[in-house]
Length: 247
Image (cartoon, rainbow, N blue to C red):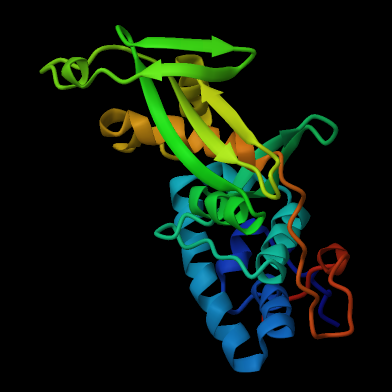
């Protein structure tokens, strides 16, 4: 009688293997939201984007299996995408001290945040940089005066940036709010951002300040509602089920 072998435990990397049970579990979540044909098609596309993320950010492969699975199932429930060209959301590793390891989190991307701000009834009125040499006044975290000096900005050598700010009008006559980002905020963002090696911070520093201000305003919004799956089965604990052999 031949000895029975224990099936190999699937890992995070198996989420992009179309023959694995891990892949099929996420496919089930997508089918529950979008239907058979569209669900399978969309997850096939998302698994390609996920494979790219594993390559550019290998630490995702060190995240717990359950955390990656749950975040990928949320991707379908939120009608979101990992498409890097759209910059709607990212899958990122975050250190969890309690488990002494990385867990995956689904973080909203830049354009997703702008869209959610608009959906909440807020209107971005202005985003601007303050350069050294310009007249400005900041009181209690609000830019109350800023005189833009075009002659200074048109110099061959651009002056030092002191801050970037964004003015946003609240809905229903709620007034105007101001979000301010300073050089230290940009440096902090660069320290962990996926974009730190790209041209974003080398050629378009204004974009970096704008992204930070948008994120500040986005964090003040209530959480977005989650779409309900069509399937009756809850997906809450599907990734706690034991792994099985590949088909």
